[in-house]
Image (cartoon, rainbow, N blue to C red; front, side):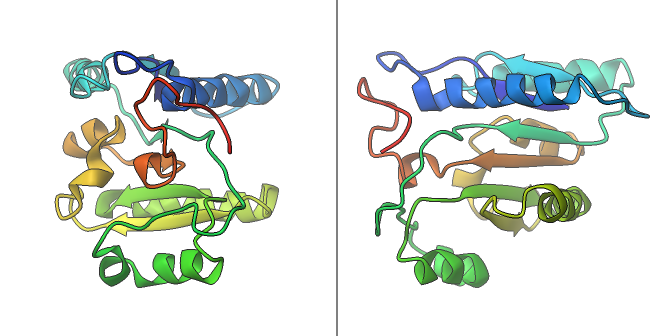
Length: 197
C-alpha cells in the first residue's frame, strides 16, 4: 500500500503538507501502471490525518475486520521541501544520542535539508531494508536518512505524527517518508507554507 493524507490544517494551503505526498503517490501510480506484480498494490489518500490520523485508523480497522493482509505500507507525508543551504535542517534535541549515524550524516553535510527521512519501527526493519536495497539499485542518487525506532516509536512521539503510526499500532509493517516537517520547513502549518526554498 502506498498512501498519503490529503487534508491540511486550517489557514494553510497544504502545499508541502500534504499536496507533495499526494502528488508523489500519483506519480508512483503512473510509473507502476506499466508494470505487472504478483501482489496487489493499493494507492490510498487518507483524510483527517491532521485531526488525529482518523482516516488511516479507519482504513486499518476495516482491513483488520475484513482480514485484509497489508504486507507493507509506505506513507508519504511532506516530501516537497528541499534546501542545499547549510543549516536549513534542524535536529531535535536528543536525536544525536538516539540516532548517531543519521546525525553524523546530516552534520557531515552542514545540516542541509537535502534528503528524505525514512522511519521504520522494529517490526518494519525488513521493509526498510528492502526499500534501501531497491533505492541503491534504481535511484542511488536519492539521499535518504533511515531511522529504525524501537517498538512502535513511543520513545520519539514526533516520529508518530503521520498515518504510518496507525499501521504500526495494528501490527502492520509501514515506512514513513518525509522532508522533516517543522525541522526543515520554516513555514510548517502556516499560511505561507510552500514547496522549496
